[in-house]
Length: 179
Image 1 (cartoon, helix red, strand yellow):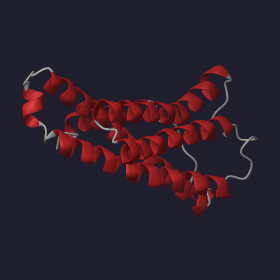
Image 2: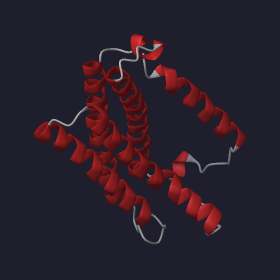
Image 3: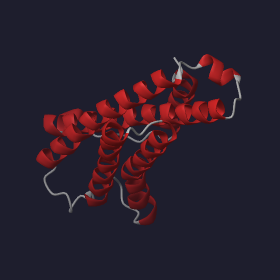
């Protein structure tokens, strides 16, 4: 329930932005099922990591406020810190699985990575995957949690955001190409 605090406004903003900036899309029949599975897995992985980023921010705020003995309304309404951390790592695990599947399907079904200007997207996706795997390894070998887990999650999400939106920004606004 704590994720709804941020997820609903973000979802509403996304819908409004999609309606404002609507561009005609290609017909589904033009795409292969493999490419559609890659797209679906990519969007699902990105969505999972977005939820994980929101959870990481909530965990960060909750952790800091508890350490400072500040009992705000937010802290009183969130689940216990351990539950928040467990949920964060479950989301990261699910996101890693989805991102690996998205990268594998992309490698299999994208014909010429460099001709389509997708190399940077792949590099940033792989870097974010390394950050998330590093977080999971650090969690199980060094006991990373709390603020450290939040920072690693947000760093991985920032890299993934660069992969998704940074490439679109560069191609459309800098090089004046459609994606």
